[in-house]
Amino acid sequence: MHIVVCIKQVPDSAQIRVHPVTNTIMRQGVPAIINPFDLFAIEEALRLKDRMGGKVTVITMGPPQAEDALRKAIAFGVDDVVLLTDRAFAGADTLATSFALAQAIRTIGAENPVDLVFTGKQTIDGDTAQVGPGIAKRMGLQLLTYVAAIDEVDLEQRSITVQRRSEGGVQVIRTQLPALITMLEGTNQIRFATMENMFRSARYVVPQWNKDRAGIEDASKIGLKGSPTVVSKVFAPKPKAIKAQMIDVSQGPKATAAALIDTLTSKSARLANELGLVAY
Ligand SMILES: Cc1cc2nc3c(=O)[nH]c(=O)nc-3n(C[C@H](O)[C@H](O)[C@H](O)COP(=O)(O)OP(=O)(O)OC[C@H]3O[C@@H](n4cnc5c(N)ncnc54)[C@H](O)[C@@H]3O)c2cc1C
Image (cartoon, rainbow, N blue to C red):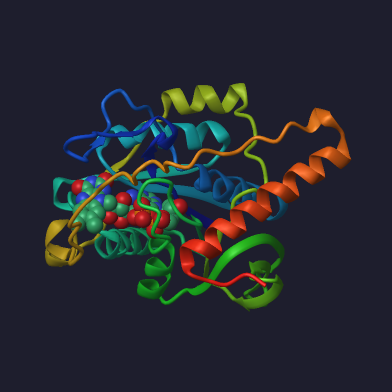
């Protein structure tokens, strides 16, 4: 079984600030990490490989520094990696990103057919959750989003059964391979890197693919040229003026409940007044 996992290197959003005057994102000194959602995809792919054998290839599209993310993936135990990097990819929106990734995965699959593609549910910087479905559509793969667990993969029947979390419950879905899974967060825990894999990662020569190596002939579909999205403005939301109100619980349950009721009653009366509602 050949599994491809798409990962993105992202700035650690816990450390990002927006410039108060220019409203631009201040990236200086912000460490780059593997998109946290993608760690669940890597771990699930490795678990499948542990169960069924085969190979896990990880791919990322990004600047040359994204090599660090791929080295980490090797330390976790993946077999191969591909860094898709070319000035021609710069300025790509989700449409152009999914086009480039889909074409590169096709090229990877030409040597060793791909049964399953994983992405994270979304990234912590772009946050659109569009790239996974975009790849699936372009490659004609069965799309399984918000997957929480993989119950069964039957390579003879070419089928996969997964648990998909949806509003109000869990759906158990069975479909045909090849498929693309967008993996939900909190579904597993990334393993520790072994010493052997850390040595392998340090020595590994990361293959860098430009657009030609990825098999992309139509340059109008990648980078800025292939990106119809326009970001008109980026701004930080204004901090809320209202502060959280603390209720002292040390006064005991009865007094705490009474204080809570008082607070809620006065707040709802104020809100009703503001909205011009009559309270009965
Ligand atoms: C007009 C415009 C210009 C842009 N220019 C640039 C630019 O120059 N440089 C730049 O870095 N970004 C640029 N971006 C951002 C870029 O479009 C997004 O980073 C990218 O499309 C991924 O979207 P997302 O972060 O919302 O991912 P999501 O759709 O939320 O990601 C879902 C999953 O897809 C996979 N995935 C996403 N991105 C990648 C990737 N690059 N490689 C492998 N797997 C991936 C991951 O598994 C991820 O969990 C630009 C965006 C716009 C709108």
